[in-house]
Length: 177
Image (cartoon, rainbow, N blue to C red; front, side, top):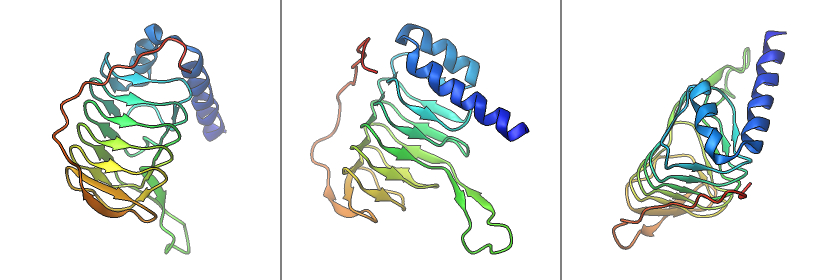
């Protein structure tokens, strides 16, 4: 019964987040124990899997449809761009544990200026270095060094990211749900 109430609360959180205007979302974030910079933008349709254990830095943009499995913790730096339908997982199961299928979790860290394109997936324990880029639809199972571009399933190194990122993201549109 307790689990059912928990998941009902999560469904309510995600519904309220989808419907709230940007001006009221910081209140919801504080109530949930999230640490989200005021200049960060989380569009409607972002889905959370836990309360707390989520930190997002200034200027970061998280588009609609992004799934944040923050059960083991997610830290996202400043001016990070996460495109629609990306998935960030911090918890899974031990497939070799035949008796209990035990849960295994590790936090995910995304450093400043990293980019996740549409449909990208990060698995538990991954760190994306500063300025790292994950191409669309890629599945990242290992950490990515700073300023590297990766792509594929599983993601493989494509090469260096050219140019030092120095931009500021700021796309807060009232009706971008």
